[in-house]
Image (tube, rainbow, N blue to C red; front, side, top):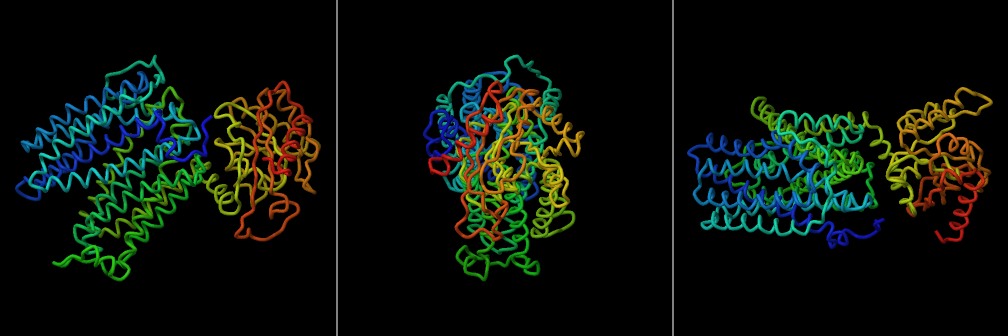
Length: 633
């Protein structure tokens, strides 16, 4: 088990991650240098604005087209073959593609440039499923958020650098020559770094490969439909991010020109702020997640995106939306004109929130997708991303050209749509919103220290048993777990009007006493057996009630009955620091002070089913409690 307390730079130094990180960085950098250079050349050498728009849109469409046509094949190939060898082949193919691209730029042949853009998109189509599906094979589960944060931050830095480099040098006298040499050199560097990527076994060597474009693509979505709903909605959530991002990046130059009345340097500064803030948000996500896949950050990021989109649409007031004057504001003038600098703050807020939003979703897909179909799920995600980006262009054309809306009005619409999409996703997959509530409780109201969380299995059934100190014990245990846990809850509390919605969202299992409701009592045990048979985690408080004095009461025999019926490992858990909190029997009804209360969650090693007894489990939890009181855990 990897140490999840290691900083991100430790992962960057490791051979299992660094070569892939370098390879994907130079791949993204080269794509954007070439695309931006070609787009500017196509615009500059055309006779009129209409032709320039036609060629630039054609280039953008040709880059995306391979994702629709060949993602099915790319996903199958990444599933069937060893990945490091495939990555080397894909990166080797980039060298002749860039050589052709260099000739296209030097001769300024329109159709050769467009052909090379298509080939660049084709190469990216086959690289995408490989770079994301290979991560879980080389980094531990508790490093996935860290690895994805680094990859996402590097990608957006590469997009920024590539766009800036391609824009600057293509406008210089020797620009085409420099660009031509650069794209070939970047391709060579990417290939050389790919040679150090470690061996990565095929996920499904027996997969039948299909050359049929239609059937291979539909096969991706069949594989996606076979996954859990959380994976499917995560793919939808990522595609929605690319929808928003594409609109913002496309609208940003006009927003700066017509709303901020800024010049070209202000446009460049806005692009830098937005791109770098996404990179910063991606890196911060690992810190806020405490080196785990923390789905509670996803709704937090989504709400922040909505908030900052709204603020960006309102600053300045709509009445200030105007045609630019002949003398546009310089960057210095913008920063010193009223509250104009707030525009950059809202842009940065959107970018940082986007990092919070996307990184956990990528990590969740990689962790929860069945290994034999992981590459195809990534490929399906790429197809949906491309589809949503096309849809974003259609929405922009309809609102800005047909309806003659302003950019702020489009951003306001985007804020509203983002809120609706988020509500839809979190309604369909309550786990996201539940984790958000738990995240707010355990991070904002308490300081939580977890130990031994690696003892919770990454897959397969198990039962967690814990001492029962407060009404929110289950939330702290769930916060320490990388997986959902279904807790048994006393029926009167489960069905209480104030909490029923929360327990239903958490898929808790209501249980009543055998004496008061024998049928409900038996149904609870049947539901537990069903959950364990499905490979789920079940949480139980064997004391059967909250402690009245802070001590650990006897454990009832119900746990033995569960394990006799479903022989799975049992994991003892100890909660410390909650006795005397506002949610315990010894309640001190006050809001947490600035010095937040420390809650310790300790997860012990699993006990085999054959050795489980109620008394032995209590002994283990009592031993953990003694260690906690002595300060040794």
